[in-house]
Length: 389
Image (cartoon, rainbow, N blue to C red; front, side):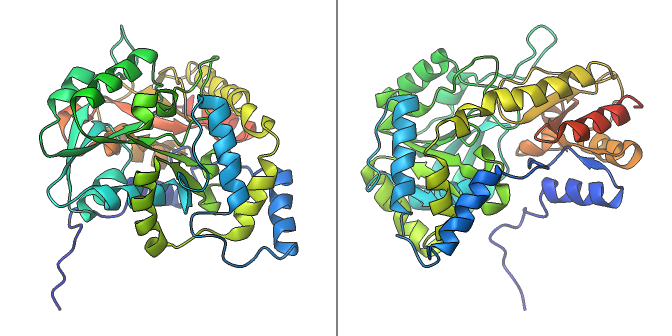
């Protein structure tokens, strides 16, 4: 039987490849983005109590109503924009489903979707499944004088054509660990004023910003909020990536279309998880404490890497940190990452994996991504091993 794949260029993800390599070589996995510690026992207990209280059948398709109300309150308090919990908030099976449902709802056959490169690997397959065409626009790569990735918004706007349906942004940014600044939102406002497009804003690391920086959600600007689908993740926020619970906020007309896809993709999300999250979120400190919690881990890894031959780049947000191996090897990022895992027992992710063409010269800046969502002892042992490189 001949099979005509809808995704002929898609194979096993780099995260699976590198995680499997880490297992084979008993390496510390600082590649894939997941914590090696459990959620708060209070959250686990809240989910347990929801089960004991009989909340084990289908909730509403759009999500458990008290959880949607908590999301609306949190978003209004943080960003000054009040979403209607009934008409504008949808609880999804992780942020991945929110992203996929959004692409399927709005990217029609032949539509172009502008992506800021490097980007999370879900975007291109999702766009292609919807029949759309991804249009990557590379960020300005770091240099010794300016060790940050930054968006060239003029270049982004030049990529917009009459076929452009959507622009995808992701901040705090994975994998470059950069945050938005007010001038970035100013540029986005100018773009939406001149072009009739939607913005899909992947904000899953919204609570992981450092050095007193505040996350600048697109919800903070009315002109952007009326065009934006904002996606977030309880898995990232509350150290429960395996639960796969996320959500999206969008104006009612957009939410209606997203829900049409959502109801046939998964219909809804496990009730006790939603109920437990709703109970847990009554205390704002559960997310307000996260920047300090993760900044301590970032600082431990950053300072440890300074005692190695790696050159760490400053991480403004997410639970990742980039480091240059320029003084160690001239291998490609993929080959260096495999070599490091096999020979020194620390798994990382090549930043080139987040480019449309990972093998292109412009995708290889001799940078690898480390995840610091780990216990202090895990990071300490990883640093010890990296000092031997």
